[in-house]
Image (cartoon, rainbow, N blue to C red; front, side, top):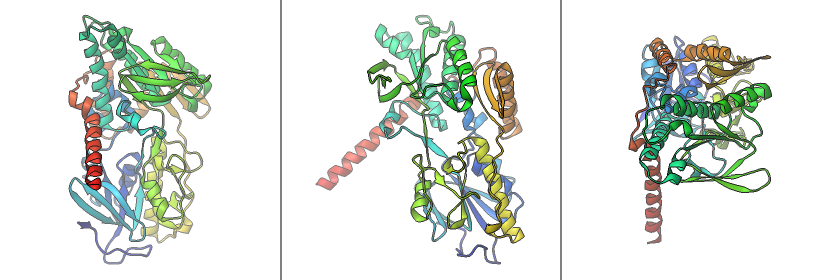
Length: 463
């Protein structure tokens, strides 16, 4: 099936139809670009593998029962339903043909193709296990709703199993939670597990004391929150330690399995931490679409798969293709949502200038990122914030974090519900701690099914 016909090779669309913009990805960058093209004389098609816009910075709150999925993941189709020039397509993009200017995607058993005059690639990044992809089975990351729901079930499942087991060694293993990566996601996750154990679940069990759970935050780096600097990193570390979180730095994870992890210390010695619940937040890898584009153009990618783009966020020799968000390598820009949002708006502006104003791509000004600062929560009433030379931590930083995140949430209803959820959380109440066995074991079942398919395929070839 092909959507939008009449491919062209020039910069402008024929007079009998409007300029077609295809946007890959419904994250911060993709959605910002689509919305910025509202009222423009173009046809926009946004294609993404999920039907929602995920507010990824709050995924850890879904994983620890503070927020529900709907509060941070509104339907992309509903967000854009009043934008008459926008079409939403659910599909996994598996091929981009730069020469033919087409994007091929699949939705279940249905294949379809989109033709473009301008392409905006905002496919984001995935969790990186630094070449050890088998770690993922036992230590999920925090990049999707599926990840958050699985982690929530794993966390709660550990407490439930610890309540009924008679084996003391098994109980200790179940009540040991390891978070790998001391960046913002890791710090936020470790702090929330500690609060969940010590406050929310207090007096909820009869045979175990959840407050005695062991929470370990581990990283190969020498500091907590390195991008925030030593002052805020140390403030976050002190607060985590007050919550009982064990922080192990300069420690490299060398192996992960069902029952624990193996760690290499600076002196080269190896040690093991027995733990049922492991959470990975140690790195990211850009979407493989970046490499796909590089293979067809003169663009290059770095070790993390990010595309080295021109100053106008386009690919070398292809002014009609833009790459934005976590997929770009430009001027050491961080992989944060404001970069993606500003990039999406900038790209939309250039498309409008050229389609409606007759401007040439050579006239594009370079993309300039306005750094509004960085922030991360550590626990209830405690956060860190870095805004230019200003460094804040504690309650004031937490209030600032609250205001900023509410402002970025899509939709008035989401802001109200989220604020109410945070208000209830202040009283140690978490309304979304339900879990199911399917969430826990789905990843393992899929891995086992894929392995069976691989063995069957190998057997068929050998026969």
